[in-house]
Structures are given as C-alpha cells and as structure tokens.
Length: 205
Image (cartoon, rainbow, N blue to C red):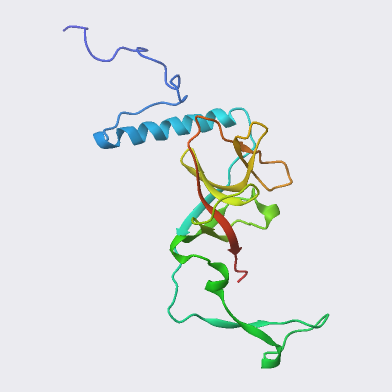
C-alpha cells in the first residue's frame, strides 16, 4: 500500500501558534455574516492588545436592557417633607408635601429612554453599584463630565466622558482603588456614545 496521502505526524503549524494563541476549529457561517464575524474578531484582538500584560480592568460591563412601560394612570406616592432633626414621618396628610409619580421623576423622554443593569464596580465612586438599574436617555446631548453609556469596539461600558490633551475622547472610571484605567479612544477605535445616564435606582429587599 502507498504511504502517500493522509495526515503526517507533526505536520502543519503547532497548536496555539496562530494570531490568537489558541487552537482553531473549522466552521461554516452564512456568507452574509462573514464581515460581521471578521469585525468581531478584529475588535476582540484590539481588546487583547490593550490589556496585554496588564491585569487591571478597563471596562464595566452592563447587562439586561429594559424599555420603560409608562402607565396611562400613573402611580402617585406620597413625598414626605421632613422638617425635624430626627424621627419618622407620619402618614398623616399634613406631612405630605406632594404626590410623586416615580416614572415622571426618573424619565424625561419616554420614547428615547431605557434602563440598563450595572455589572461591574468601576463606577462605585459615583454611587453606581453592581445590580443597580441606570436610566439612559438617548435624546440627551453628551457633554464633558456626563456619565455615558458607550460602545467601545462592540462592548458596552458606562464611564465618565472626558477628553485628553489631544482633545480625543476618553472614558474615565470612578473607582478610587486604582484598579481601573481610563479608556482612550484612538482613531481606529469603534466608538459610539449610546446615551447619557440621567439617574439610577436600586432595591434593598
């Protein structure tokens, strides 16, 4: 029998020696999705290059996007006016300053507003904790100093909008431990401000 053909021992590139330092697999994808997959892999590689050799985390992840559901009959709850140094407000009407609709307080423009769940602790110095729901308004114009929901190389992150000495945008964390570094937006970075964070809320029980 012929010894030609078939797989040769130790032939080919050693596993893990490619661009991503990992073994590869063959897969079939729809032709229409080729550009999207390539773009994702390029963004993945850029992210690895940014943090290569650096154990600090640069991004806070977000999770669970929600759109607000506004009722035709708002729920008006009492807003107490505390005028004493200590004590608990009585439910009596003379302590109620006004009735407050929570949706009206949190939302300026319902059509352009959605909620996002925080998943990360790089913004804890701004009072944004893991599990909090933040209110994002896409109709607001982002200004320097605003907390924004941004997309950086196809990943969502919540940070403070700023700019460096070269006037290029950068996104600042708010965590005094020093575990997080600013995200600098380079000319080749895929970057978009998705909305301005205008508030947040959480439950304790």
